Amino acid sequence: MDKGIIKEIFLLILEIIKALCEILWKKIKNVTDLVWSRFFALSDVSSEEQEWGVTGEDTWPTVPEVQPAKREEPQPGSERKEIIYVPEIPELPDDYGDNRIVLMVRDTEWLFAYWEIQKGVMDSALNTLGDMAHGAKIAVRIYDVTDIIFDGSNAHKRYDIEVTGGARNWYIHVGEPDRSFCVDIGLLTSQGSFLTLARSNTVRTPQAGVSEVIDEKWMGIEEIYEKIYAPMGRGISESVFERAHKSWREIQKEGVSSPGSSGGSTASEG
Image (cartoon, rainbow, N blue to C red):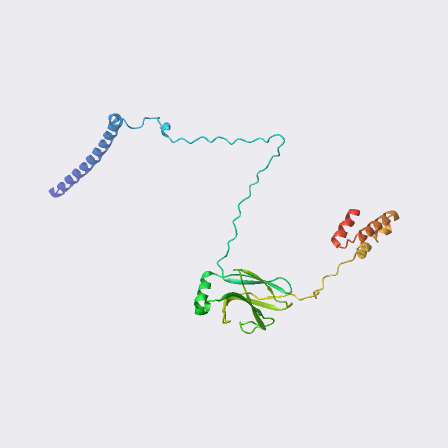
């Protein structure tokens, strides 16, 4: 066999033996360290280390004892008062961050408006007016917009109401039933110019007098009596029929006219 090949095989065997020895040495070293730490390294432990089973409870912070509340017994002759806890309800805010005016109908001749104008909008309007801002007042301008598409300048008529006392709502007397209205909240200058801050919705006052809507006709007392008691009178004794008729007449004299009430009386008689 060639000497070179033999040399290569010999060197390979040496490398294998070397690797096995290193692995074996590491194993032996690990076992030795483990045995040493278990049996010979106890003396190295500091004497200040906490002893086994000692928890240090005496050094824990103590919680103060809470004495149970004493229940007060009612005195003889005194009334026992029951305490009712009412949940606190938060107050409504003064404003909601809106810039608007809302119009509502109160009756045939009166409207009600409430509004909210933000400070930033008011400051901007005063800056727009410039010198005319001096003496400008907050006012509500009412427009009659009956049967038209309102564009701000084509109202049938308009008039202003000065708002005083820092009010944020106002009752408006229009005095005209069956008409449509909308309003503006704005600044009215001493020169008569009006700067709109917000415009409301449109509302219509109801008609004056009796409504033209015809409700369903309710059955009268006599008709109810005929339907309920008349058929019964044919097949029962005369005394029962007369007693029922008398009771019904008494109800009628008392002025009971509601169909619901008369129905309830009939059921109790039966």
